[in-house]
Amino acid sequence: MPGFGRITADDNGSLVIVSVGYMSFNLNDYLEQASVKNIKYLFPFPPGSPSFRRNWHLLHKIAHISGVSTKADSIKRIHAMDMFAALDWLNGIRSEKVVNKGLNMDMIPLGPKTHSLAMALSYIGNEECSEVIYSQPRLYHPNYSEGIMRDANNSPEIYAYCLKADGIRQFK
Figure 1 (cartoon, one colour):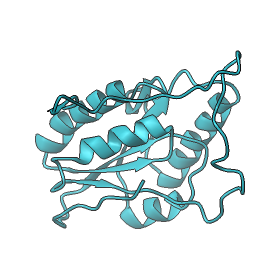
Figure 2 (tube, helix red, strand yellow; figure 1 turned 90 degrees about the horizontal axis):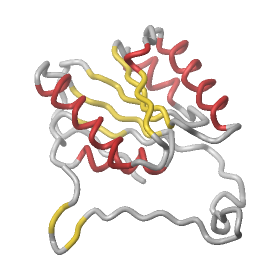
Figure 3 (tube, one colour; figure 1 turned 45 degrees about the horizontal axis):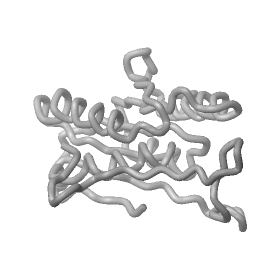
Figure 4 (cartoon, one colour; figure 1 turned 180 degrees about the horizontal axis):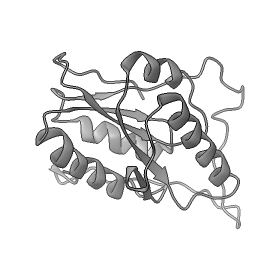
């Protein structure tokens, strides 16, 4: 998924939303250069073990690097497969914090693909004050995208999200 930049550049300040995953890639550089003052976390919950520990480890690392205090209300727990709940939360944050206070909203999808999709959809129609910064790894494991996930019965475990039906957009 590519990144999407803001159309206008201004210095209003940004609310940064990080979808928490396993690795920060080059997020450290961004947090240091951008002098971030306000971060909210989209936390996949419940994740399966061992994901749980790895997610909390990354959140702790980001909070330490950014120097921004992490309070309970800055962490939103949304099921890792619930793209629509993540999108609703992002749009609520946008109307509460971004539109009403004149802030920009920088979204960094490091977590589940469903949360990354929610961030990309939240960007649509909000290009003036939004940015999706997609951090890429320097190297991929050779078998990174090989095969299909299977459940306990060895059936393919595939998820799809209806974004448009009969020409009608299914998200806000």
